[in-house]
Amino acid sequence: MIKNFIKAGIITTMLVCFANMAQAQKFGYVNSAAILTDMPEMKQMQSTLKAYESILKKDGEAKVAAFQQKQAAAAKKKGEGEMAPKEEETVTTELQKMQEELYAYGQKMEADMAEKQQKEMEPILSKVNTAIQDVAKEGGFQYIFDAQSGVILYADESTDVTTLVKAKLGLQ
Picture 1 (cartoon, rainbow, N blue to C red):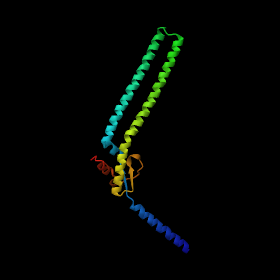
Picture 2: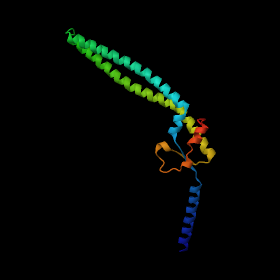
Picture 3: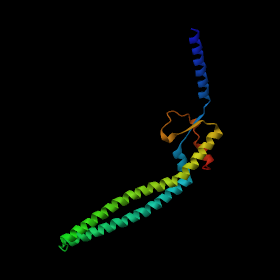
Picture 4: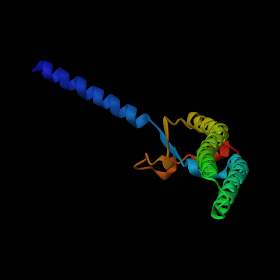
């Protein structure tokens, strides 16, 4: 009986300690989309990506035009009966190869765009993360969540540190 009483006392003491520790923690959240939207670096990045995409599209359109031109010339020559079966086989093989190259170029273009976007985003995200860490340290926050990720089930608006991070970045 005394052992049970001692165990209950220890468990109660531990629960009280854990409850006090939980109450001492300070939580905050940010809206990362709002921060990124206001950053001039994001506007510059979007402009850079549009220009890069334009260059890639122009190259792709030139490749498509060359394919279409070759295809039309072959169809015309075949329609006029001026194409031998051996030549038709060669042209068909060349057109298939060009079509495969167009498909590969499309995939490469998408990969290049994703890589360029990631490269452009790295310094921006690093800057935001540094500002968030600074705000957390200065404000005594143990945790700051991102409202955009959907992780927060409840948030008191008084814990929103988005304006503090924007101020740290000089956006206000």
